[in-house]
Image (cartoon, rainbow, N blue to C red; front, side):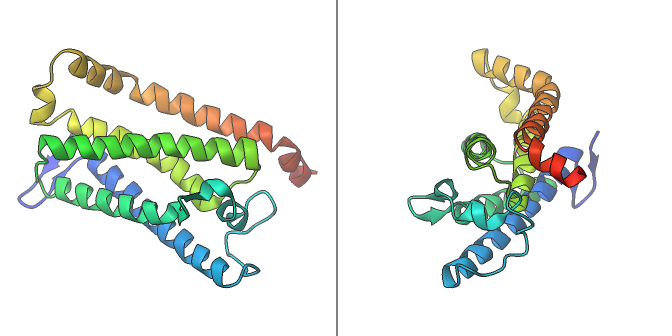
Length: 203
């Protein structure tokens, strides 16, 4: 259910999208500042360095933390700023055209795929967890789900035909189960891969 007023067109999906996008911007900003600090002083103490496993420094010093020499957080700043703008426009009742929706959904989908790549690299290859990155692992798929839900109620969605309409229907039908399954798999992976570490904390 959504609530519409003179100024705002509120719905849970739009509000969650804005909250997640704001978190993504803050996380990207903090990681960018930390990266700059580390470039100035490789021995600098970063606040999110909790132990050898939960560490921002280890994550930012790894190869997957950059694309063509540019830190991932820089791309994150751009992407999350755009998503904040999109969420704000939607909350104000503005309608996006078809091309804009294609661009927004494509970026969100690519971002979600890239997050999966980073998860694999962090957990299974590097064996580290960056706290801010972990937050992005959680929120990025939610943003994609929210965007799909919002798009499904647009005029562009009603004009879809054939495979595109069927694909949207499947996405809406299986989004919730897929998210539950995905988060369960993520939790299980973190528990199993770092079992010795968790056991040492208990012991």
